[in-house]
Every structure is written in structure tokens, then in C-alpha cells.
Amino acid sequence: MTKTLLACALTIIAASTASSLHAAEATDKGDVKAGKALVYTCGGCHGVTGYTNAYPNYHVPRIVGQNYEYIVAALTEYKTGERAHPTMRAQGESLSEADIRNIATYLSSISK
Image (spheres, rainbow, N blue to C red):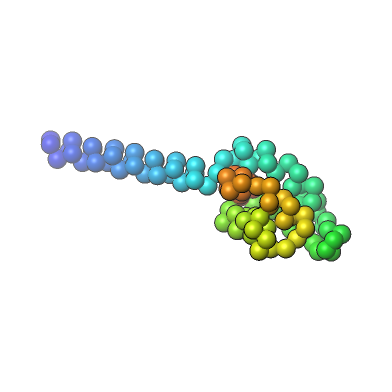
């Protein structure tokens, strides 16, 4: 009987720990609602099928459903100037690290 109780207790502790780790991971990535509020202007360029930017002239990629890590890396590189694009540099400079994580969490949560 004691072994059964011990096994049950260990199972409950393991499940609780796994649940806590999952919640912490989700929190570390960002907040979906906050990200949704931040991307309202992004669709003006990134949400239009076939849209090209006038200066410099290039195809604007769709960002809905993009990989979380990619979005964080791209926005961080625009923020620091590692990626050079006038509009995106201005956007990146205005974002905090939390903003970037929230945006990436929201965009990566949407299915294409």
C-alpha cells in the first residue's frame, strides 16, 4: 500500500512540475493578446497579397504563421540595425524585447 501511495504522489508531483514548466515556457515566449494589439499596423504591408514595397523595391513577405524564433531574430536584427530596411528599422527601434516576443508569439500562433 505504501509503495502505491508513493507512486501516486510522485506521479502528481511530476505532472505538476511538467505543467509549471509548460506555463513558464509559454510566458517566456510572450503574450498572444498583447502581440495581437501590437501588430495592427503590420497587415498594411505584410497582409496584402502580392504587395511590393516602393523603396527599396521588394516583395513584402507574409508573416502570419511564421516561425517564432525567426520573427524574434528578424525584429531584433531590425532593432539593432543588423538588417537594413528604413521602415522595418523604425518599427524595430520602437519595440521592446517583450514587444518582440509578444508579436512573435501572436504571429506564430496563427495558422497559415
